Length: 402
Ligand SMILES: Cc1cc2nc3c(=O)[nH]c(=O)nc-3n(C[C@H](O)[C@H](O)[C@H](O)COP(=O)(O)OP(=O)(O)OC[C@H]3O[C@@H](n4cnc5c(N)ncnc54)[C@H](O)[C@@H]3O)c2cc1C
Image 1 (cartoon, helix red, strand yellow):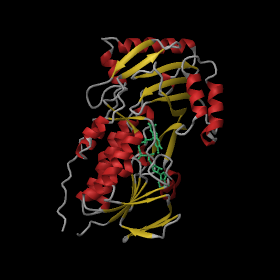
Image 2 (image 1 turned 180 degrees about the vertical axis):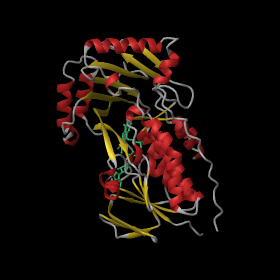
Image 3 (image 1 turned 45 degrees about the horizontal axis):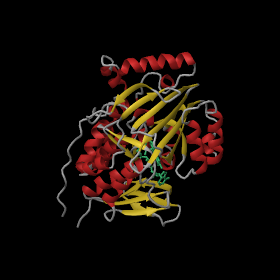
Image 4 (image 1 turned 90 degrees about the vertical axis):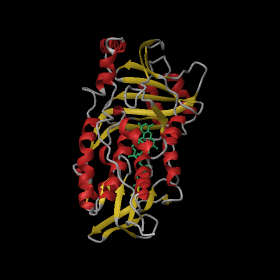
């Protein structure tokens, strides 16, 4: 069977597995290289919205993904004693609300996407690109472990801190730090835990959150605003110590979360919240997709939907046009306006939702109550509704294979 050519995809996250699926679907030979020794099927609750959900539909995965939902019924802001101050029930459409209709654990989404490409694309785990050169004939890649190889195209899907992007674009691509640390982890579920996303605005720039999952645990996160202090580079035990200092005065669920994470920090993860701005998403035969190109941050609720949509459009354009230069320009032209809107966070975010003073917390809570009231629902809905539908997804015909 004749193929369209050979593509290397670097990174087996949401963007990498999705672009691998669609490239294979359109007749390319695909190799996926992943730095981790196996698929990283971990991570917390993520949203699939609007066009991202349509891509899942076109992959035939909608029912499976819906069955794997976390069961979150909505977002409930609580006070220091856990009493509800404002509630936003889950939306019933593809797009609206802080709680999207499709809420799924990242690990389950990645595992489902990977099953679709298993046996259809070549996987190389525990390796990564060390050098790339390209000319009219293609892309030559050297790896940390495997022998050098030649491909027609390279797709970089390595997430926000992509090393290959740095090799190719250097400092041109800019990470915008949003001034917030967030720590995530799974903790034992207790009888008091419910199916709401419970969110305590704790003052001094801090937030404590608990969310349900479908595997019998509770997903916790602790967030705080502050300058970079190198916390992201420390060992988990040291990170948890620092979180204990930051959250020392909070009585609600912070002590329980920190005790659980200290006892078992298997999937504990702490990072800075950031966005990615790359002036171009391709150079020659090399393209960026997902967070590596246009991370919108977890605050946007759009990262996964952008990764799914971008991967679909990139593979479709590369397959619909005979010349890769035109295809990559068209990918960027179709995706740029969508990405620009998704990266526009609510004014003042993340500071506005994480006030410092008591007065600030009281004013924010009043705003939430108003937004949750019947007349405020329209406005409140808009506040939590990312622009997930604001792209017309092209249909790409499946080519005849010789
Ligand atoms: C382990 C993990 C947990 C996450 N948890 C959350 C979460 O709880 N909440 C949230 O909102 N977002 C989370 N994210 C980010 C979220 O998955 C993305 O924002 C979004 O889905 C877009 O995905 P992506 O495929 O572009 O990037 P990612 O999901 O980051 O995937 C990138 C993939 O590339 C691999 N990779 C990185 N560098 C290299 C390299 N040099 N060579 C080869 N492979 C490489 C990574 O190991 C990873 O598998 C997580 C990401 C990861 C990797």
